[in-house]
Length: 418
Image (tube, rainbow, N blue to C red; front, side, top):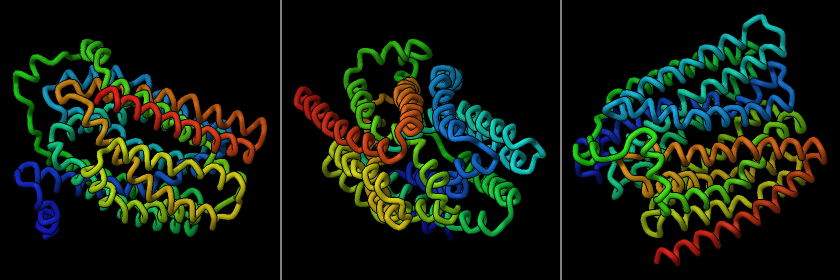
């Protein structure tokens, strides 16, 4: 019955295989969203409970990004050993998701607070390698599996549903973490999340690949030669440069929010969950709108609009310690964040060729990953030197500058392309 309802949901897709893939992807994503909603908002809070310092909280953002950066090329070389995208996706997904069992053990392990925190930070970083391989292979598989004609609508619908499910899971998680005593609360959270994410893995196995024409696959460069081919692709390189400009403003503040909410404001897990919930509700309500807007005006315009809307966030956070004000800001970030994520994903698939997409995705990840290694540590270092309010004032000015610079950069590129 559920399969029939979801099939009706994707009735606009004429090809039956593509439609069934959309169904399986939606169910897979929904089960994964439960795990994500249970765990994603609370990584920093878990680290603090284990005894992590501000520096270690910063590493929780930067160290996985560094592993992600170093893993890109080896991941592509491993993926290219397979004749398809599905098998490396499944194998790497199984390994990365099994780390939840280790996190559950760390919550109850009789280790000194400092040792537990360091084990978590290091394990969280190591987990990034199989997760990186999975993300690259999955992205390449999605690009081949769904036609560009329906891609924006398919993922808008998928993201809409999974966001709603994720926020329901986050509501439940926040309540559970506050009701149950430490460390039982986090141990139970990770075990429940593991159960759902392995259900997601099962539906991932049901995806049917739509293979590329044999001639295209054979003639495409593989391994390191695929990376060499990227150097001459100016369309892709300019896309990455434009994103690097935009994401300076986001990565600079990436490690500051946990410090602000947990360390400075002392907010409970319920409040952290509520932030994610409100943001998720707004994403749920707006994903279809952004999908239609991308189909009508293009992903690039939506990218500039949605990234520019985030400029005001550091200024408001820096001058208000009211959780209710922060909650209102999440209405903004949830609404425009949906359009930002959807536009970036569609632009990435649009500017990458099918046969060599893993290498392109790896270069994209390396560029954004390097930014995510450097800028969060810069933000934390500045916070240690001048305090949170002044640091967020500077972040506000940075976001203004990068929004203007990105607008001029993409506008110039568009004129040259035209």
